[in-house]
Image (cartoon, rainbow, N blue to C red):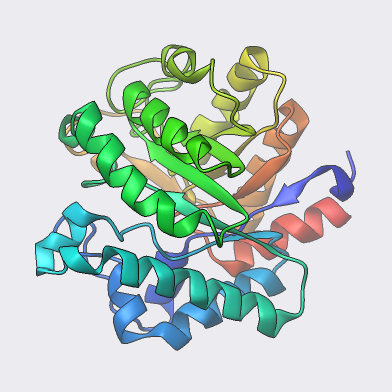
Length: 296
């Protein structure tokens, strides 16, 4: 498979912001990467630029933590639209400065703390808040990325709302901890897929989990759909150990350097993935190694 058949995504924006000295506090208790939009917008642009220079053909605007629930942690729930627009502006600026033909994705993320399926609100609240975000991002983003979904119903509502805008939509679930093929909410990947199978999304992915869990998940997705599939992992492999559904990040894991991460991505591609990138704990060096490996 040549690189013309593949789409390379970016890596962990929050991770790279931290590496550059920007304060990105704990995602469980703060507004996480949204703080950088306010305090370090030029660094957000620089991170996008770094991923473009590393080969990314799709960059995701830094709006992952710009949800009403998360912003209310710091009394900024009224700034959802403002900060979402700013995230898109910074991504557009990076693309313009790079002079590369890059697509911009924008996120429909978990509305509350990531990986916590028990905090996913009911369908009415999901639809209301996702509609609020989607109406801002749909006129400007090249695609809407419903990502890090930990429940089937959460993913289905996010995708429905995104599709109602007429946008291209990618749907991505997370497999937290060390349980292959299992969402953090306890559903199998196949069960979650079934709840969204009737929707005309453009691609299905798995993200924000260990690389070896995505290696296991890609063949599962290939067997479920004839649409494009892919993955973007955290820079770790999951190890055997205890799983705590209220703290899935505590599961034991082994860090992956860029070479080991690119090895994993090659396995995904061999299994049928055509959309590949990185998530937490992956930086431009990881993506650059993936690009060089594929070109070679």
